[in-house]
Image 1 (tube, helix red, strand yellow):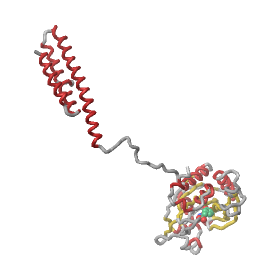
Image 2 (image 1 turned 135 degrees about the vertical axis):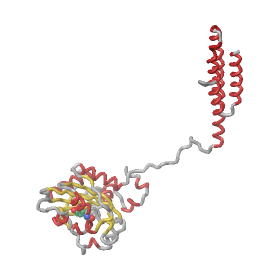
Image 3 (image 1 turned 90 degrees about the horizontal axis):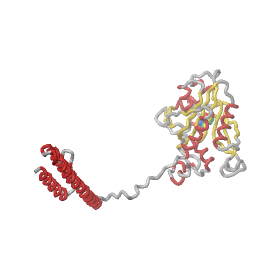
Image 4 (image 1 turned 60 degrees about the vertical axis):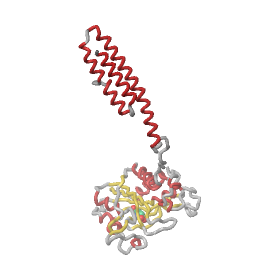
Length: 340
Ligand code: DAH
């Protein structure tokens, strides 16, 4: 009686599974017939109504059918899944075996590369980085740096004027003033970044980069400045590089000097890069003018300092032998990829 019931379940499960049209409905049939609370399991529970001696035999029969249905399920499932996959592939246009769209890998732009190199070198002497605004108050860009209203640097040819009282900073030196106003002494800071001047040719770009250095401490002398720049230049180019200081003028330093290094390309013999002089100018420097300290409310009798400013493009041009400053902003990937 019970065995007939099992046989009926088995038969209807077998024909339903064989007729299933997709793997989802096949799975539903599996649950219905041979699942944990499926029809076969329910019959198993009725086994108690059988005489004791018939029970093992009945159990065996149920398990045999169950096993057969499981095998049937596996076979049907495989063929339905294969069928579904080939149907899907026939309509899908997405071919996962095709290579993905090419993602070109970038490289570090030479300007931040050079900035990082300089910062790494001077960080070893205790310098850390500060930034300042690109749109700068006239006071910070000029006045507080002892650049009076009639100074040639204020010429409209050089400076991009914004709304009254504001300019696009023409130099990174204004960060000196922000730092002196906001931080306690002694200090050693570097400030790399963009500067702007209304100038454009093979060696001038309206937007270029500088790195400013400022040290303020007690009893600071020209010797400290020379030692620092000497160390930095030799580390940046190579230890065979010589430097020289030419007396110069900057309103915010006194005394002031321009720094030349022996041409790293021809080693001082004379070439196109150094215009046959054997020397290349890399920036300006000097002892901080007491007037600058005073405008930042620092007592120049107690504190002295030195400052320097280098052109980043210039350093990159010399170190990597770049022929035209405009290459840095052309975004030509063949040029840019040459730098690691
Ligand atoms: N700011 C100067 C310029 O743009 C460069 C400079 C010269 C910076 C002397 C300095 C310095 O800090 O001491 O030409």
